[in-house]
Image 1 (cartoon, one colour):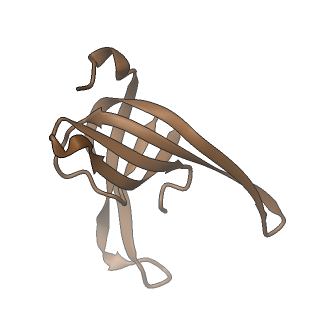
Image 2 (tube, rainbow, N blue to C red):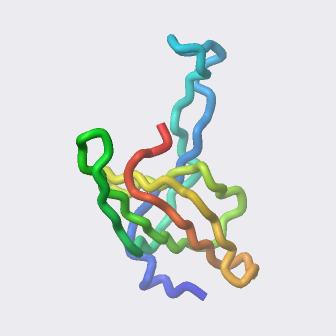
Length: 112
């Protein structure tokens, strides 16, 4: 079980919602990030890597965000902490007990 003292970060979980019924200039649907819920969590960087791509150096940080259980959180959402975005790649219901979620994230791209 998560101790309240471990949940030290204020975070906002967001999902992509259609912004309008029309297409954007390149024929894709317009989307806007919308708040799913605000909560507290624990953000931990797990590992990072840097690579050179198209003459630019890129870094990628794999991060785990621990929160209390909340139904409806899925891969493809994102987490906002301050001005930093974390793209949710995996959602694990720890011990399948509906008490705690572990969100496997990468920091940065905000999935568009």
